[in-house]
Length: 458
Ligand SMILES: Cc1cc2nc3c(=O)[nH]c(=O)nc-3n(C[C@H](O)[C@H](O)[C@H](O)COP(=O)(O)OP(=O)(O)OC[C@H]3O[C@@H](n4cnc5c(N)ncnc54)[C@H](O)[C@@H]3O)c2cc1C
Image (tube, protein in one colour):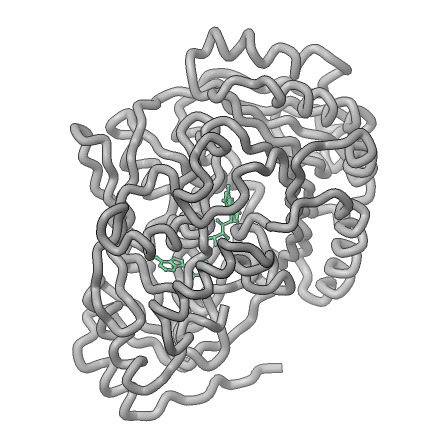
């Protein structure tokens, strides 16, 4: 069914167009149809209009006009949020795709990143200087939403989460005021922006600390699903004492058609151990040996490569335009009982396209003082993301039902807080899922910076 969005009153259209340097996209504009779509094809919402902003002043103008007319807004960064928080019916969407600039100051080891940039933009610009910072595993993920939710990535155990490298931001507030915020100026807002999942304003610039890094030791080990329980146990034991240079992920999936995997295994249930060692390669080769030396790997494809290359190698597995339903769970420890359930999941994924990801935190993430940011997950040892996928929208009810059933199996012994970046629409507001001091402080901050709750439709 094709439901038309409510029309914006002429006066609002005129006011918005008065000084917008970008474009105001209305539903009859072909660019509107493209821009309202987000990465998750299951999200099908129609904003009243889209302000395709060209700069921070455009963002401020759009917020001032919508404030005058009491119109709610959403913000589109990279559009990757699986719950579709960048888009809602009947609102003004502020699209930041025109703000993707990245400036690197190599002497200061700082990158200034515009609010609509993708991780591809940042990784390419910083790699030119032999520098890097913690970014997403898939290069088309937006820096904006990713960072506001904490930002986990291959470098986090060595250099911290994305928010731990965030030095300052420029933010347009709900009333259109542009403020700089860091540890000294608007320090309370800066705290909320680092892990609170947004909803305070539009970040037009992020400034990140960078680290020298050109090369990593990285790649995958692939085993049949029959070795899943052992692979998870080895991963658990290995990560308990792993150096900060190491970051790994276990993926239960049907094997993709990788050129280095025997074609007889393509499409069969497998367990994939993905590793990244951000340090000396020879030391890394010795360190990861325990992950290699058990069972009978079908493929061992690990070697030195540019960090920039590794940052793009996952892209093929996360194409735009498939219907997604995700569930996430966090654990303080992996018990043998949970490992058995996870291993069983290797052969009972909701659809052949679905995957289950097991990741660990620790390292620098767990050493940062919890009160420094609003990211309330620092003591999580492991988290699981159930990535439910179907190419067909009419299979969504089945996908949801099967994903929830599998999730219930895995849900005992979980921590109360979910990683905001991976929550789905039915998990509610990702920042306020637990009754604790962080929730109370975030809610107060939202009331202060967005008194009209105009960013509230999330
Ligand atoms: C394929 C894939 C891989 C992923 N990998 C990782 C990963 O490795 N680690 C991780 O932590 N997460 C990961 N994620 C989750 C991702 O970080 C979140 O979905 C995040 O919300 C995406 O940000 P975005 O800007 O692309 O999304 P959007 O959908 O555009 O926005 C998400 C939310 O952030 C707000 N927002 C975005 N930009 C701004 C801004 N500049 N100012 C104010 N608000 C803004 C939006 O309003 C919305 O509420 C992944 C997601 C996908 C789909």
